[in-house]
Length: 500
Image (cartoon, rainbow, N blue to C red; front, side, top):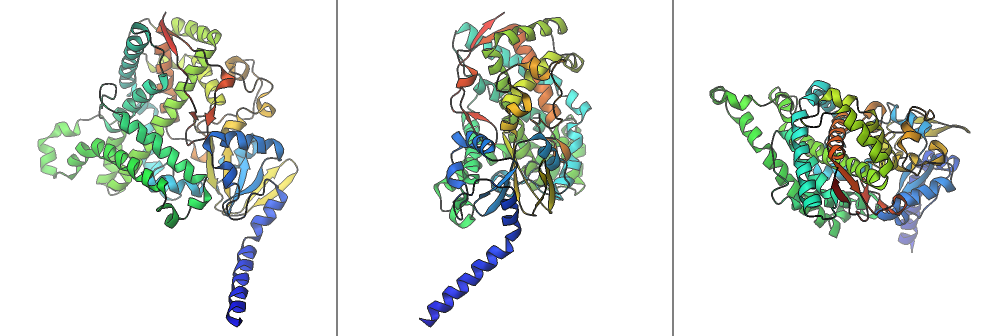
């Protein structure tokens, strides 16, 4: 009996100490009240389904005054969906690190720029930045134009000549991944002509596995997760992706690991364009600033991020235009006016395509390619809200809901959930908060590849709609989205392609 009393007393002391050590979180949660959730798992049960996650968070933001605090597992979770607070977080030096849940991604595909924390992130960003400079990106245009030709041939063959309704997303993913491999690794993979299904399924499977774990607090402990079925799925897809990246890196690694005399005897090995990512970072490896493991991690994350976000944003732009013929015709008028009927598209020509940029921005507003990003408060943070200032304790996990913010009537007006490029980005559109539209995020940790994505999307979109008209029976209000690392649809509607 005495031993039981001692054990219970000891457990109570530990529990009280745990609560006392977290008192600052409870004070913040009392001031910024949100849904309480269940003990130990917080909102895990309500949020565990990616198919309803974004809709659930939208409902909470209307029920509670955002920003508000709730719980994911035992983590204090600050939810944000208003431009003013988003600006504070994105510009804060205390919130440059990604949220703790991104460790699930880095443990799967490597610790690259997308997931890494200070000071590793700052060092790698400084070294890799030149690979995404304006002049470097202009050197990619021949690759982008060549892949645009492949895309048009594919649309013509399958959509026009065979008269099939197409799931365009699958075609776009191959084109964007092909461009990413060439501009990142200098390797042409011919995804349109060989079996690449396993690679696409692996990328899709990896993001789904990571998101399921993020939304399941009981799987956070590694000891439990490694005994789950989800971990088995992760091992399978990671093995495929690592093999793919090793295949891309193999000829480059062989050059670096060869001796100096061998390199001098084979100067053509050094003749590769300095424009590509791998040639830029190879010099850092030779100087000892990066290891080859760093390069593998960065290559894996760079290709995955480029392929996922760019193909997603491009697809939703095409789908929105297919559902809205009026805006598609206005886009075609600009393309005919500004571009030659044949030949490659230049950077100067792309810069004149203002309406093209508008239709892309409006699609990314409605369908944010990355619907939610997570940050971590590395120091105490003073958060301003219209009813006062509040202390956000160090260690708080911060969820920035880009998807719902960019669709919010309180921010974008009564047409917020409609596709209307002129109303939201036209010359007569009302001024919005500078952080109301953040598809590539903003501030201190803005996406390194946003210019790359803009150029590639603009060029592919211009080449498609100059020559083709695309239509679909789908309607905007019928689309069902899934909350994932990049936005997904539960079902992808088919599109009809016709020559102009």
